[in-house]
Amino acid sequence: MSHLSLKIVTPERLVYEASVDSVTLMTTTGEVTILPGHISLVAPLKAGEMKLKMGNEEEFLAISTGFFEVRAGNEVVVLADTAERLEELELEKIEEAKKRAEALLAEKRFADDRSFADAAASLERELARYKVAQRRRRR
Image (cartoon, rainbow, N blue to C red; front, top):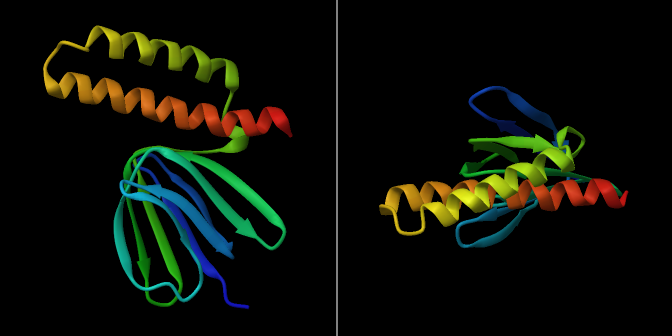
């Protein structure tokens, strides 16, 4: 069976690099699963959960906005503003950050469009982190 060569990069670091069977992530138009042999593609990312499958095992990451590219030769490159593996997430800290983001969004509700959009993006990122961190608690 063919595999995907996956690389996940943020401005700060190389988060992940390995061979996987599939990658599922959120785009601005919905969820996409990339399998070996996928057509070449470049698309914007939406903050959310990323699922990697390797055989019977799954790994989860919380990613924020950015882009991904599927290249010929079964290569996938994800360029995200932030990306965190499940084991890096601390639920208590995320809950605090989520509360701060909710308060900021309420504060910016009637501010200029840019401030409101930044606050909404911050909340969206924290909600994605929270969802992935919840998985860790269940395991």
